[in-house]
Length: 231
Image (cartoon, rainbow, N blue to C red; front, side, top):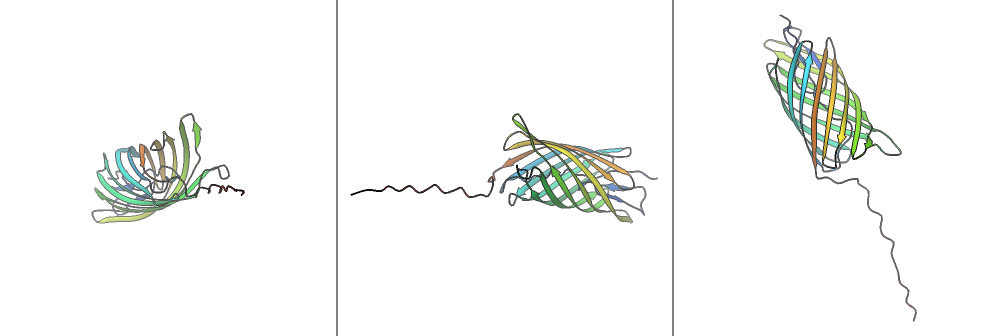
């Protein structure tokens, strides 16, 4: 019996189990664009989504916590569950480094990322992943709208019973952030994974960012004022 199933973890890496054809593993988790929050910011990111592969669809619930080590480097930890055609618990982490920041001189955000994730449940999963994200932010009244896209490549290892396999995969990322204020934003993201078969992963979520310092520049010193007294 060859039952295609979709499951949890890092963005759009794909793995098939050759010695256990009744099970396939595919992974999808939102990356939420290229921008890194201000240095020292702690960000909570709850999301809900759907993961679909062939005729199988599952509900995915994620909780992530991200800390900005600098204004260009962030670290994220995550926990999540998938329920539906496959029951799975996953956990992992990623690093994101922002190479370019959207500004008048460089009008684009550009980042690279790397991620490692694990899953336990109906399948045992390990994935490693790397990729690039690019985006641009536009003002829209009181909102800031930031469409983005990206590409991810990596591999996934999945095992079930006595069968296991490791395969490479590639994924495409499309999403948009909606900045409401300094603390709160929302986003939606669609990931498409390709290997021997397709995977669609769609998520919506919010970001609640606390603390942090904007920029690293030192304020200019005020000019010294001297008063000459004539005697």
